[in-house]
Length: 215
Image (cartoon, rainbow, N blue to C red; front, side):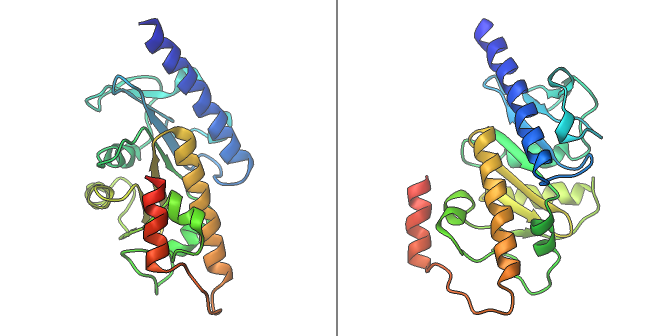
């Protein structure tokens, strides 16, 4: 029992640390964005509604049972369903981050993108941390259709980009989800900087090799 308490305390503190880092570096603003971690017993800790990631209180984080019922902490974010959808993926997902980060959102607004894979494989690190990035069509926040669309994409992808909204990224740990989200943001920035320029993305063979290495 003590081990479980120790794990939860550590995770709560880490969520505060990661949230503050994301906020301080301008990757999220105001009360936008949310992060979550699934504990070893199946419960999920999540940032509450209307909470700034820069000033989280570890004792007030929302807590869900393994069955997805809110059982403790402050009222959860209305985007909690996005996290629950991402945890349903095939791989071992232990954390999820959702930000309204500027460059990623900007890419989600572009008309001429490949909806099955929004960003080209510009760098090795993007490929290893993200792989492929499908675009989920726009739905109003809280719409059940958005949950269905994200859930369908999340079945085979640990990162998705929601049109006119932002990215949702899952990882094997909170740091893993954080770093992948940051790599996505930097690649979105590169992509926008390179508009109207000919680029030399990685080949399909190079991409496959990198994805296999990152498994």
